[in-house]
Length: 331
Ligand code: 8YV
Image (cartoon, rainbow, N blue to C red; front, side, top):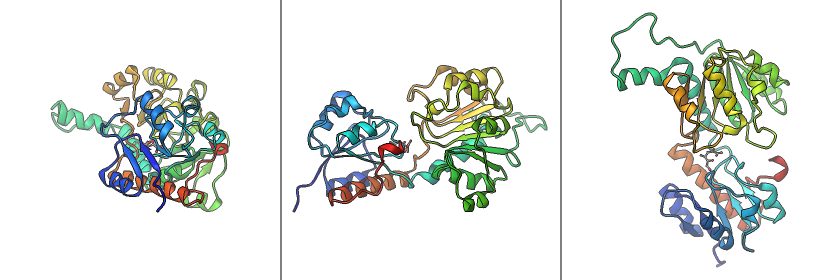
């Protein structure tokens, strides 16, 4: 038969995904569970037919300039492609694919988890009782959080994940508001009883909870800027399971410190894996709940993502357009 494509996979994947990749491809899979070093990445793009990177690899124009003649496909293991210079890849006729849909519901679940955890003080309560052993008994005025139902949720980015968050939040009794480049279809708007805000500024000023669910692109960098954050009510909360750099993190931290925002639930950070120490200090003050980028971290989700990567690679080498191609003009 045909020669199997040389597929370099930059991170350890679940065993069953690795096994399937080895059956189908000439798969080079790392053994150690750590991000690739720059020299390892350079070696990978020089020899591979296909690179399977993750969010921990920076696939920029400088790296792509060193790519060998065989590199034809970057099949990202993940949905967001902000770590890949898709335009530079296109210029070199390298196709980029991602893994949409399969992590939508898991990420929406994690968003709801943070949305409930911060106002209802779940981690604080759990830590006081289990960690510090400080529970002396029930009191009518102790560990009071803020009610969720009846509040206004403003979703920034009403794509697949934003819509999945809206469905859940509606069932929890929140009213749904959203800002997006385009208005969603009337059918979805009716289903969610959602209010569209063309002006992000106006929406921010009126919401009790803001959930960030848009991709990180040059257009969304610091979309929640210091000026915009200042429009929010001091009783409002922010939840972010998208990308850290969509929010001006320094400005948000300052507002949390000064009591100009009630709290934040964050799964992503502007300079991750580094987390601003000022943010860590706010954990102790009950202002923030921080998670280490776990939004899509389910075993089922990771297997589905692996399956998507495999389908994209196989379709590409069968000579067809892979289902999850990322077009440079859409990034
Ligand atoms: C992954 C994600 O953790 O898919 C995304 O955009 O943020 C997460 O699902 C990571 O990106 C995998 O590369």
